[in-house]
Image (tube, rainbow, N blue to C red):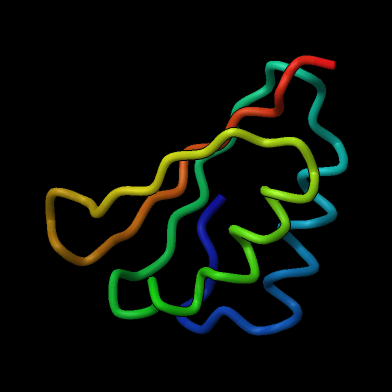
Length: 74
């Protein structure tokens, strides 16, 4: 899933709706522009409250920021 340059409420809703479709053990990678990584807090909050383990890291190109998440087993 690649989000548009600005993480607005529509982008957060899109992430929430997508995560609702994932089963335990399913994985997803959410990619945003590195310049917008500071706006990722609402996405991290959704992952925390919906049973996901996650790890975030910057891309090798210095222009992207990735959040790799996996739904915890029930």
